Picture 1: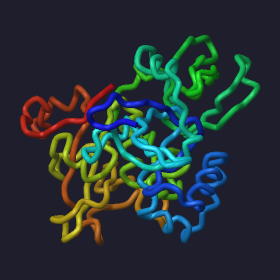
Picture 2: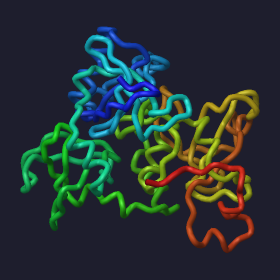
Picture 3: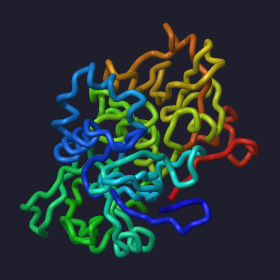
Length: 332
């Protein structure tokens, strides 16, 4: 398995939804993984608040269909994998966790085409993957931001490669070519508002449920911009922005010790001291004021990752080229 000095073994998630557990081999974890993978919409929708709270600190992150992973280790029926695009400074390969080995496929054709072909991305909260060009034989409901290699495109559909080397089809009404993604303040707010009232899910990074940083990660991915997976590391990239210069799409961070301690939450600025965010396991995605109550006390600061041409016409907006000491998120 992949270690620092070895060539990595790449695989891909072959189910609609995979949970990355903190430890392997727990029968209850295996049972939950099976239920969640088989029907993530029903599984997540039926979770009680108590069950959502139970996931805290047991789950490291989650992943979606087709997502590339590096297989780091194996114990019996479990793989320790790192999600490649969920980057983190804590592991060179990406955010790490344990999944049932049956939920990961190693297919050289898929991996090669992921690297060398254009990619199609699901652009709606849920899209149907079909097995036929007539789009009449559904296979899975896929989450927002699932990415798959593009084999061909026609007027009504995209032909895509699947993780096991098979072929599937997506409606052009539900997917876009990744090369067409670009940052827009109006669009990123519209993307976020699609998920209002969706229940928070610890480790969530999909349409089945988001945690706070999983929500901002996927929203920026929809604009072609890739942030780190967790809120603390998201705060360490981008350009610092003062409250008086905030624009829609900027990320807002909140920390313990009255804003001076450990960063524990992130939301996205909308307007008029309002943010959209995934608060915590007892709640759902919503818009909240951040200049009142505990948010006002815990406000740490803001960061900007996306720019529009009009931004540079005001002196309030620093050009990223002028910020030499601030690292920036990258674009694929």
